[in-house]
Length: 177
Image (cartoon, rainbow, N blue to C red; front, side, top):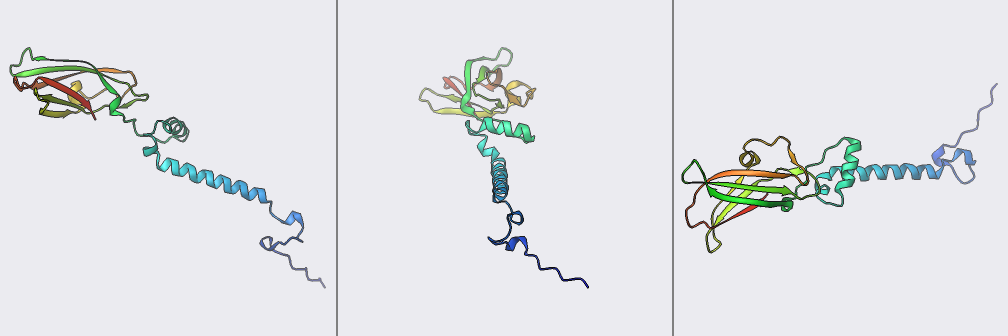
């Protein structure tokens, strides 16, 4: 007749007098917890990457992480980094009552960014706006841009045809959005 085996203590109920080989290693649990915490932090950063990508301090790290994980970042958006380098307003040579507005601007941002909306405003002697309009990139470039981003340092020439507001308009301003 076989003798009954003594009952075994489950691992979760191990006590101080349980042999060391039967106890789980405590540092193993810390490594698992650390790995899970790192995974959670990575998920939080990736979930909030659109907002964090607008921060110049975070953007390089996010580009590196997204390069490894093949995720996407929204284009950099810094309208104040567009600088008008030249502008000219003159009567249109072939269309009476129309002005030909030519301006060149440059992207002075550190990263490529989406093509901006260009706002042209006409002002009188008192600085009051007489007219204002925002133009899409296809309108001021004459056709849709060849690439969806304008590179850092890239200059662009924009040409617009607008109705002549008459002698009251003495100044033009250009802004980007």
